[in-house]
Length: 327
Length: 294
Image 1: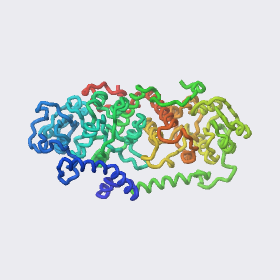
Image 2 (image 1 turned 135 degrees about the vertical axis):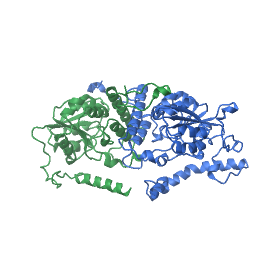
Image 3 (image 1 turned 30 degrees about the vertical axis):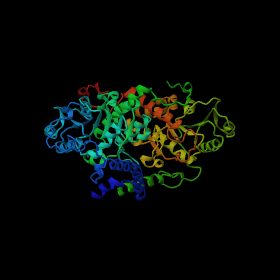
Image 4 (image 1 turned 90 degrees about the horizontal axis):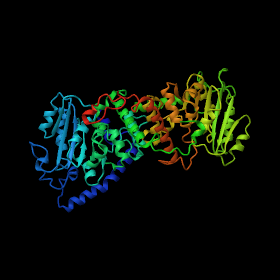
């Protein structure tokens, strides 16, 4: 399957010309940012470690960061007295193999970071592994169900920025920082993964369809298939208050609430989680998870209808309904 | 990957053989002889409803094509016209004309026309797009053979999902949410389509003014809804100021229609439309019990 993977990372579903065009677009988008970075680095007189990943790191206190190189980590930085800047929330269910690596990357996103792992229904010692890796662990014996861990983690989070990731695959700190930065520096309220699922085809998965449809209903078609359902994403504390922590358990509902409150929802970098998430992709079309996600989006639509009226706030263009006795 | 493309290509090829424009017999696959094709079983009557606003250029050709079909009535609902549409329609013999000076609004003409016939099969077309009789007949045939709602299959003209417009996305989503993923983005919003008497009575002719709501009602009532034949209304459609570009008025209207369809369905089936959330323990996060589970 090697060629398929390579293709997926670069030019999946495009022809040669399409791939070239896509690359050009990506470059066009990235270039100014890369240039900015370089200028910033030069001004500080720090050349960076020649690595592009290094240049995305936080410049201030990078060396003196309390979480940078410590091997045994005693707890979240609130031991120092002040609340953390970033809270990383990771719901975990039987993910002992990956959790330590996930936490290790998560702790590096910002000098002042707390990692909250919500372990639920785990029997494989995930909690112990998470504690050893330096996370605050909230443990539940029973399974909480999809995304409920996000709500619970958010309730006990103290950071200005809440970053949500999953415990089953590693996203590097360099990939995660843009989300934190979008909320901290650019004042976005919701920073979404610019990932839209596999959609360069005639027929898409129901989940991809539902995400696109909800954004269209919310009047945000420019978001495409980006969704709070997908990780990683970051929200500001203000967004958390407006959305409500309990709604974070139903991500499409949270998205509808954020859009209705006219929060600033932005697409940040693209982390192709579909590829890393392979094992979940193998599920069948009629799997309960797909039905759950479609139902979640309907619940969000129902909430929207409750807010904006039966037509979701859309025009009727002077329909003379008295002529056709529609209610 | 290559294999999937090949399969899709064969699928399209097969549909074409049914006859895009060339009326071929479904039994033999040969072209039908001219003049003998358009028959329905004797006990079934059919009518057509044409909604017209300002379409003097096209209405004549539309009506001439309809006259080739075995229809007992052709009801032309002319509303809010300011050009010569009425005169053009009057020129064609054998047409029932309903004339309303004020514009009725989108799709209301269909509902008005549908209420004026008691035919077994009702075919709906628009006055702005002449479709050859040979491409209309499959819709009558489909209903005659047992379908309740025979939709125009626009999927061959939509292409890749990432190039779909928002309206197509929401159409496909509503169909999927109602458990009819196979209908894809096909909708009563687009013409031509045909309805059976049973469908008209179940849905109610008035609800045809909001086509997605009518479609949702048909699906929920367990009627037989099919996308039976492809007529290219996408590339041939007249370009108007209000129907082009993202977020145009008509797109917002159709979006609203689909939200209305969803809200009607939710009144009947609950907010999650029979897709309950049984796994989440929302009370652990301070939330309410999920809707649609209790």
